[in-house]
Image (cartoon, rainbow, N blue to C red):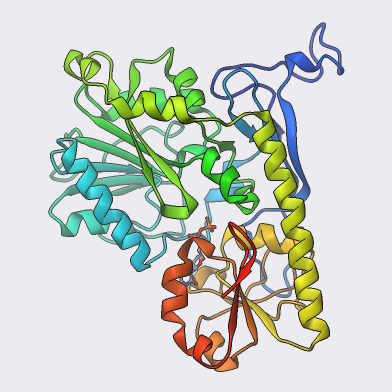
Length: 418
Ligand code: TYD
């Protein structure tokens, strides 16, 4: 089901635990363990009440002292994680606004309105761009997600050969290759970069949007650590990865989405114009990136503090016979509820809009996922905001809950009540 990581996937540092001449205590030669959440369920493995909970694996973060990349100690087989995938891109206003900004930033970079998306999920972003006149295509491994009417290939980028579907744009070269929140799900980064040559030319802008480890740590967002997120991205790691390729970092943007993400734009080295026009943001962000081994120790401290505070708060509220639910059956929700050890006795249910999650239990718990309307139908006393990256939008949308005396418990970046 999973294999062990032995070397840094960006710079190659690290020796296998049991290798020629390397003793177990030879720590300088290995990636360092900085955070360990124990054996945890796969965060999107929502199962029905009468089904067996399956799919548990160690969840431990290792840090590379050479290039600063933190990565999980194990790699769960992607066939298990993604062929039948519960996650779909949120139809929220927050995401719509983000896509708008993205489109603006791509046009600003001279993109000629042709776009190929790696890991396009159910095609929400592609549809948005197509409505704005772009020619689009994509690839995604989730066979259960139907990107109706869109030219999308089912497969893993970097593993499966990309042959664009035969239609009017079959011999087209995209001006933009976009990978949103997929890069850190990929084990073999070298193959990911090498595969760009299959459909890019020297003018193609490659855009990789990733959660930034610096934001994750500052936010204390340990709940974004789960088996799908194999790496916790830093620009220094990207720099190390690209050293042996013909791509370079051209520009870096910082987005507020999902608690803080970087948009790293790559350009081809063989295009001399771009070589000379490397944007100042690359060096600025590199200079301001401070992630180190101790930052991960800080995050671990924050995690312990938050789990204890939340457990105490929930215990106290239950003691006072208050009814608590959670809002948003995100992967973050799975991590948080499992770390706190909550059951349906403490958290009655979790609401969510995603059809594939409904009437199933949050992985590793007996807490059911129900439709969003349950919040106003049942009017619990408290709702734990487990989709905290959409807090503002959700609080505004669920005004009735607030008006009837309901209170939000928001866990990140600090535990607070609204
Ligand atoms: P998300 O933060 O997108 O991802 P992850 O699973 O990677 O942590 O998940 C948010 C979840 O919250 C998703 O399952 C959809 C749900 N959701 C709602 O139920 N209602 C809403 O209004 C919004 C914005 C999200």
